[in-house]
Picture 1 (cartoon, rainbow, N blue to C red):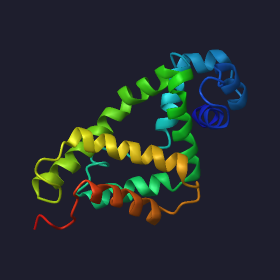
Picture 2: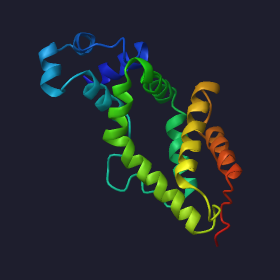
Picture 3: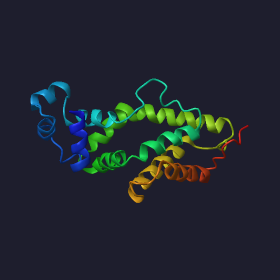
Picture 4: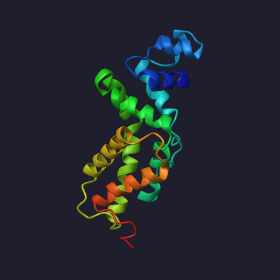
Length: 179
């Protein structure tokens, strides 16, 4: 069911995906879908989460910014993940509860891990001491969204990492500067 829901989300978007379509594609009844999920939003959030590999405790406890960027770049170098993220963020007007539910269910955990990594870099001197971590997280999220909309889905992980590292350099990131 999750694969069917994710496929439909990627193909048609959240507003054009229905429980009926998911059930039909998965070869089950609507009742079966509703027994497992409270509704379309819950189903789509689970479908999106099914592609993440960071469900294990500590999976996103990055030791440094370079490791965080490696993970992000690897994930963003997969064309399917890029299309899914564009659909997720594109749903903000037509199906706003999807993005809210996704953020509430799992985005907060990832945001906390990002913040911890950035705080460690600031504390070690790799980022300026006066870095506003909330603003830096927003800048990085904006950079990811910009990349999703402006670069081809065939962009390599190395090129994506270089792009994100360049954004961080503009914010004062100096790898290894902390000693």
